[in-house]
Amino acid sequence: MKKPDANPVIARNRKAAHEYQLGESWEAGIVLQGAEVKALRAGRASLVGGFAMVEEREIWLHGVHIPQYSQSRWFEGGSRRKRKLLLHRAQIDKIERKVNESGLTIVPITLYFKDGNAKVEIALARGKKTWDKRHALAEREATRETQRALHRRLKGRPD
Image (tube, rainbow, N blue to C red; front, side, top):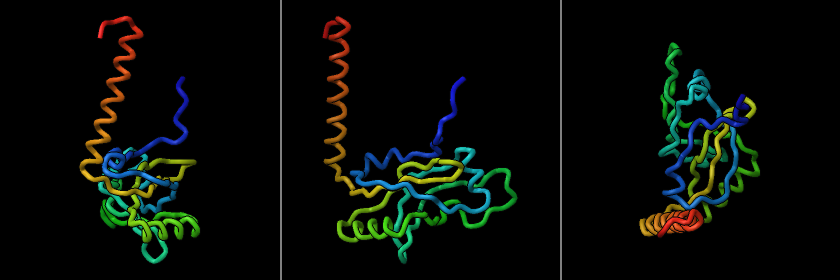
């Protein structure tokens, strides 16, 4: 029998690694209302287009889509409302300093449950230029081709 995953991932922002150069990351709690937890447990969320901002020494998550839970009677606030992130004061100050100094942005990477609590992994990120994206894609393709050639060579197949 398969052991259940310790931290089941609800949503991943795969596009973030393509759009940004990711730096330091933190795990933060997220403040949810009403049936949002049940919607997350049902695996319904999207981090694409989400970002976080420091406002009045607090970090708020914007643009993350958590749809209305189908079994709930009503839902206030909307599916893309801003949600407060829970971090230590020293972490918030460090993030705020880096964002203000370096012009970085804060993006959500993964959304998951840990010990029954909803957590979001956020990272400092710098936007990539178009040529950076093409360069990363070419590097990844070259690495894949080398691995394929090596595999064919080890199997004794002709190139």
